[in-house]
Length: 261
Image (tube, rainbow, N blue to C red; front, side, top):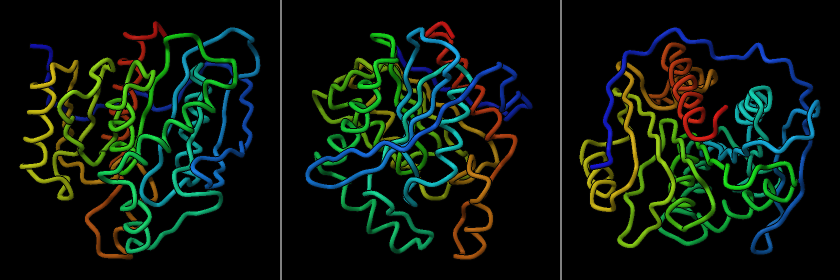
């Protein structure tokens, strides 16, 4: 059996990096299915060596500064990072109802993987990514998108989902990607039945997967802006510094094992 289920107490690992880097950031205009999109590219310009590439997929709010900041942090860690735009150039919101409408157009449809693949293609088109060393990570809605992208057979070696929505792998889905699920144990947005269905699909599909649960962490625990939004709209979402720090470190360990950095 290839699965691993881990229950960890969030630790005090360093979220940042002391690695010197000259990080270049730029917006990238691209298109998918007739929709104009605007992604965010970040990379260290102090080297010309090819390195692992990471596609980031945003929360249901859209491509915000939070995800752009995560892309820049990955660049400082030595990755080429591209934050994809799933909704359209300039489209984001802080209204949960609108966010639900924007993200809802993708669930259960091929468009979810197709739109993500357009972002992955932009990452690969930089010419900076080492062959066979590509990951997709996502936050909340973006976690589900990363799962769908991997199931489609896209060339991603690794998937990391931070407090992501769950999509059980359909029969016959590609199981080539290594999957790391980072979940808040107190997340009321994800039911026990959903977790059971997802984990069963991983087992049935013979996936290489890990499930890490952070005690006390609720939905959106990595986003420092989540607490204010939760209070404003009466949603059970909040930032959890310990879980955010530990989960980011766990992702780095996962990448170190797969990519050697």
